[in-house]
Length: 121
Image 1 (cartoon, rainbow, N blue to C red):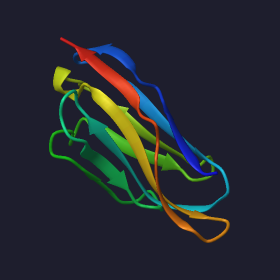
Image 2: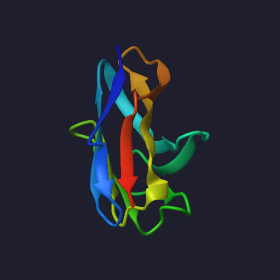
Image 3: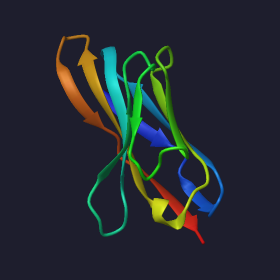
Image 4: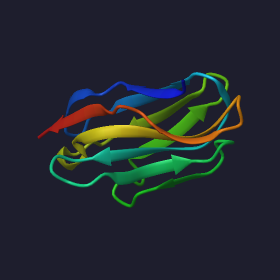
């Protein structure tokens, strides 16, 4: 079974920083693009940013550009979201997403269970 597990969420004051991690496990042959999404309270899930399989390409939502950075460690099968200058409107459940090829050559779109980030004003 392939799964993604996020960690690192919590309560932080406005202007603070936080790093989220997402670890992949299971019968994984390769992980292609990965991304972070978030769902603010009472709102729809939205894209935060994505990173290519090599880690050399990233794209971000306008709302987080210059404040958030996505990186990945393919050897560890992990992706990270560094968040700085956090604002109350960044409060959301953050989800990790990955395009995974299994050892059985199945192509899966996998989501983590989410981790809550709360930014206090």
